[in-house]
Image 1 (cartoon, rainbow, N blue to C red):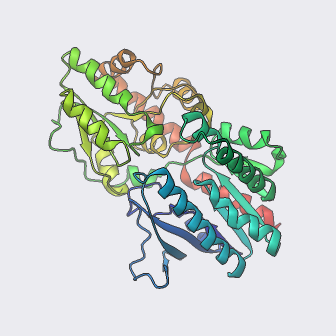
Image 2: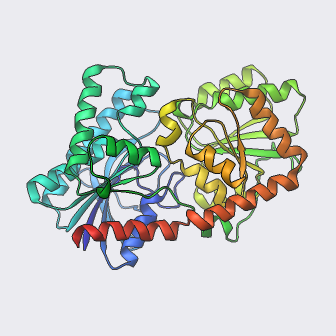
Length: 405
């Protein structure tokens, strides 16, 4: 079948962002389906297309995937109004494709929530099967974070959420909380399945060249956060732990924050102001380079702001990268990932907003590195057993094929 796949933030592994859609599209192609990926120009992403934009878009084929990229630049550092305008423009252009392209099934994945709009048009104006993938619960998460307070905007988002869910023939949730949130909107359970983010075992277990930033000594304990430096990530918790480590005189424990985001300049300014020399900032890197960094890392940091909506309503790429790389994970908020870490003894699940507990876990990892490595091995076993991308992608393709059957 021909699948029209909408993901505004699509990237190949050459970029420095998540590659779930790339991997899923590849598995669809391998199963004999045709995929047209529709995306924008996301900061840190690499679509693989190099031709110039003509009329606001460019089109080409990358690894068997037909890609349509709109000339719509987007960055996590953009302001709320700028991001909203980019989302709206992408949705409008996507509607045009949904009404004119030849395809058998339309698939759309968030974020943003507006990704579902072309699927709604495809379902009701062309009678096409529509599958909707939900990566975050909107408007619940921005409301819980206080990012959006206007009741009219929240109301409009709630209507769009309801319309997207009710228009989709089938839905995919990336975490147990997301599946539960979709069901609470009145969608029958048999139309929803759980396909969490997965582990790219080949990338992280392959032949990589280990490396560390030059500020970090070979015998330092290295703890890495690899992801967006935004409000949701709550990275002040890492700097709070760094301040605690400084009080304890532990300059042999380094905290590396690798990535980009709106709050990165403020975090860098705070680290400099408080002389938190154990914190090192680094620009984003692609997947293969990240695998090399992980090969010389001791602990992966799974950090989020202490917002209850995050506890069961997120499926962070970085957690799955950490366990794929065989790293013990330090998690600083309750929820399904914290429970998984405890159940599988593959890291440290510490109380939120406790720099002391955060620092204690890092000191424990430093004092008994053999035990930390065993935690990492158990995490890798979990990755192979339950989160292998091949296994999850097969489940994903089966779910889409089931719509046509």
